[in-house]
Amino acid sequence: MIIRKAEYVASAVKADQYPRDGLPEIALAGRSNVGKSSLINRFLGRRNLARTGNTPGKTQTLNFYRVNGAWYFVDLPGYGYAKVSQTVKAQWGGMTGNYFKKRENLRAVLQIVDIRREPSAEDLAMNAWLRGNGIPVLVVATKADKVARGQWPQHLKQISGSLAMEVWQIIPFSAASGFGADDLRAAVEEILGP
Ligand code: GDP
Image (cartoon, rainbow, N blue to C red):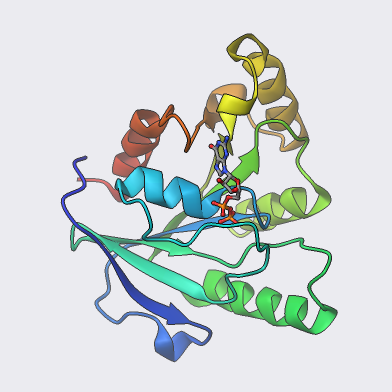
């Protein structure tokens, strides 16, 4: 897949604010600060399309990015940031929950985890909920550049084990180096189909 065009289209908190062009969507879920925005920017070859930074909880909306005029990346609010109030957390849960339950255009979720860390309780809950509801999940282990290559197998094994997945189902990725972008592109192509 060649990325010819990537554009920010909308931010939404409610269903009536989602795009209405009926294009397929791939959503991105992960803990705050895991590297979701950086992954989007790297994948789409754009420095600043999705905002990055050190302010966890900054993204409080669903953000729709249209790619090649043909499909969307949907950046979901990061979960599991302790400083966010319970009210905000509940709202996020409702917002993402509603999206998952009602959005017919949703084809799959890319769940982003940190290759260095064991998946959190929230990662596990999100993974189990999605799979339990028949939503295909692809796990991407990002920040791979922060771990020596020789240690990857051990980290990937730990992540796949706790998520009850196979090692080959986890894609190592680095927004810093671009490693894994080709595998991710291939996986996205397969999700979207011909
Ligand atoms: P988000 O909150 O999930 O969108 O996370 P960001 O994309 O804003 O990234 C959080 C921090 O991690 C930023 O300081 C990024 O520069 C850094 N980061 C993200 N991805 C990578 C990566 O693959 N490698 C390294 N070394 N740093 C990364």
